[in-house]
Length: 115
Image (cartoon, rainbow, N blue to C red; front, top):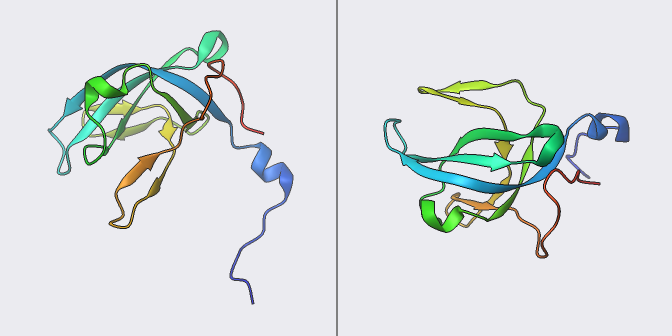
């Protein structure tokens, strides 16, 4: 017996998931749980967007520069501390529930849409 709640494909299509390249990253320690602020280039149509993510277990700010990441780009902006998060970077939990970023295993164009 499956416990999945099925959605139809149209609902999935409404979630705009794109690839972008981190162009700036710096630590932000003013929240309860320290995070890294990312500025991500999603190409000409979408542009540069900012977000915050709790990534310190596996990532250092300077190592994230030029890394391609996958993010939801059509959520409403969300206030996180003093930062307005414009996108949701996608990751999966490790065994201790710490985030591991999703990224392509080959270079792709910024702004490419997940299909």
